[in-house]
Image (cartoon, rainbow, N blue to C red; front, top):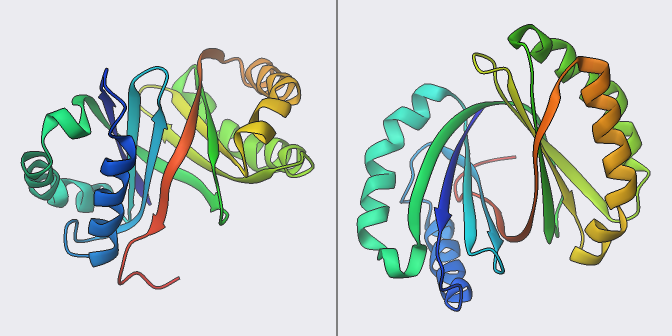
Length: 204
C-alpha cells in the first residue's frame, strides 16, 4: 500500500469546518478519486496548515489518480482549501487506524536508507506495544521513503488532551528509536484529525 501526502497552508482557517464538510461529502460519494481506500485530513488551525493523506493499493494507483486530484483542486477554490505546498508519495508499512480518532502526532526520522527495514521491524516489535499501553492511543500509520531514508510515524489519539498527556512518554519512545536505528529526529508535528474515512465502495 502507498500514501499520497499533500500539504497545504492557509492563513485563514475560519472555513476549515466548511471545507471538512465538503471533503467528507465527496469521500462518501466514492466518485472523486477512483482507487482510493482511506482518506484523512489533518489540520493545524493555529499554524494555518493542513495535510491530506490518501491511501492507495499501489504507487501506480496514485499516479493514475493525479488528474482527479488536479480536478478537485480546480473545483475547490484555493481560498477555501489553501495553497498546496507539496505532494509526496510514501510506502505504507503499518496501517492500524482505529475509529473515533481526534488528534495525531507525526514524528519524522531520517537516516541511512539501509536503516529503513530494521526501522520497520523496530516500530512493529518495540514502538507499537509501548504505545498501546498509553491512555487514549488509537492507532498508527507508518510511512517510508526508502530512497531518502526517511520515515514518518503518525500516532492517533482519541482527543487532543490524550495527545498532550502522552508527550513525555512519546518523546522517550522516539528518542530510543532514533538511537537504536542511528537516525535523527527531523520533525514532530501535531494535528487535529478532521477526517478519517474509508472511501465509499471499499470493503474492509
